[in-house]
Image (tube, rainbow, N blue to C red; front, top):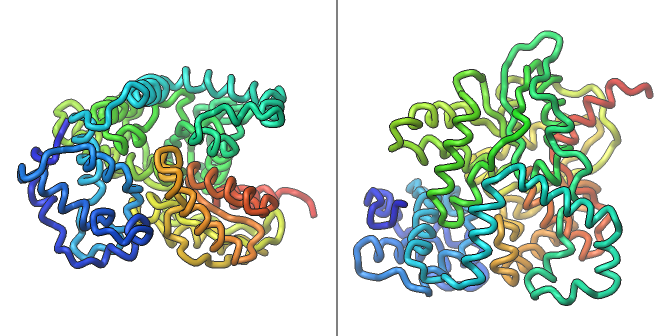
Length: 432
């Protein structure tokens, strides 16, 4: 596990302390405290690398107060690699054990080392949750007030529990699907939460690719990409999961490897760097990173077919997933797809690139700041008057959907842009 003191020192020296990142950083905007800014956090990291400070509990809490939204990287004129600094700092915190407690250690072990390293176990848990929801037990527990027995953080988040789909991705998508005259050969990644709660997005992704001449390969059992682990200081497990992906897939066999979840895609692009010093996997990981594409990016790249019809006229606003726009630098392409839909009016939202407060598990670990960001985001989305909110990350989807429901806007649909495109293609085949 690499620490700040092992890191290439030039990465730590990139920050020129100009302060252009400050107004883009949600935690700095909230507190106006230098230590809560990217510049302040990098100063702390550098002090640890220089052995001027030790890794303390206060340092650990500051690193986990950071959203990891990477808005600072978009604003930075010096090209600071904040993602690498941030993940290395969190790995330092975990190695030092300064935040350790029996409860925290158990939750991390159960989630990071057990549940999200075993896709079949994750699907089993998903089916159990589906039974809880579809049987009426969840409704009964809510009406009886049993939810109030949960700890504060869980009680606050319980309404945002994702609705688990009746069928998961492998039940909706065949391992290989081909159009009549394939021009491209691609692999589709189905994700973890995406597989359980948004398998319809994965099916729509395949449908759209088929409509654009792609032969689509979708392995039925796929490991977690490792983004949750890398972002939470468990670099060793992140590397293990990257190797499992590469054992499953030879990137040389495909024109592109497709991700449709902003947070996952940002980490998946980093496999080349993550495994650069692994002699058995470095070359394949570099090829993987070269082939990795966000679905919107790839469709624009190959010149996607503009639909001739749409399912229904509507007004749409777009919330940008932080790791899609800041981590992957994919911002214009989803808008190009939305503007291509006949009868759809795209209304821009203020602060579209600001974090919604989901940020992986941030709404669990930092509920107050997460709720503040959620409220801010919902206000901007509602101000557009749009009937539909489009977003391309499962965490954002759930955070925004929950915020809209809590603020009296439950009728506003939250949907992935690719689902809207798939609906438009399907409408072409439906008689008027």
